[in-house]
Image 1: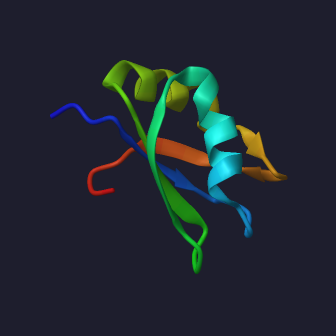
Image 2: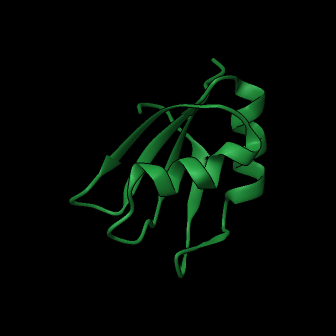
Length: 77
């Protein structure tokens, strides 16, 4: 099953919706964001699987706010 939702791990606290939108929007339309404020992760939904794939490839292991973030396809989100 193809998904358009990405798990984003190792987020620095605090990270807000605007920062995540700015990070992911160069790769397509962000249609949903869930951030677990008590932990260091969240979920980002893109408008298509191809956009999610492009964001994953570009952002996985990239430096965001001083942390190297993990971006993988979500199985739950």
